[in-house]
Length: 189
Image (cartoon, rainbow, N blue to C red; front, side):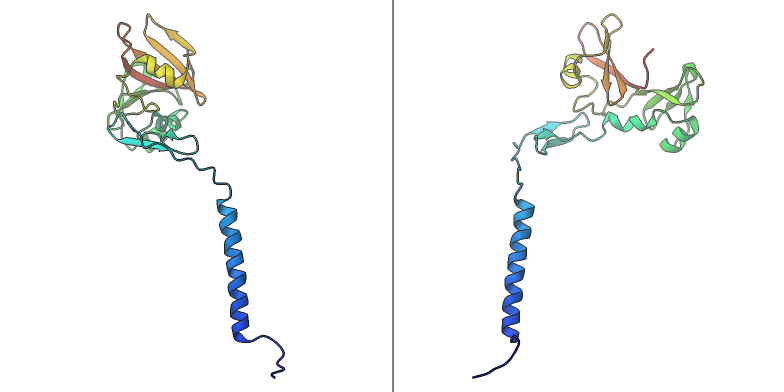
């Protein structure tokens, strides 16, 4: 009979294996216990630029299309110098003190009081996504996505939508409702 005090190497290995197995099980259970995961349908939405996006997230909403109009939001409030540095191109002057950026496919106008910071961005790029819609879609589709306009003038054929603290100003053909252009604005006059 062996009266050794302490543990043999085999006992230490078995004990370590048990501790690791219990720890791994607890970790797995903790990371997977709140599996409110939802299997989304395999649908695709075709974006204005021709790419497709699928459903994602717990609500299975369509992913944002690339080239979103929201990429123009950070331009609001920039000075002329900041704008030129951000876009990396020299603009052409246009009416009412605005600037045209040909590569960026936009026109901008500055605040009406001091003419120092960007207040309006006209988006010319027809591949820009407005939450999955594009210029050419019907104004009724914009209303389904953005809700009722805060202002709509059917004679001048535009609708303003409040969106994330800014205004999405969409123009359309009054006879058909086909959208023809969009602005991102910080204020409406």
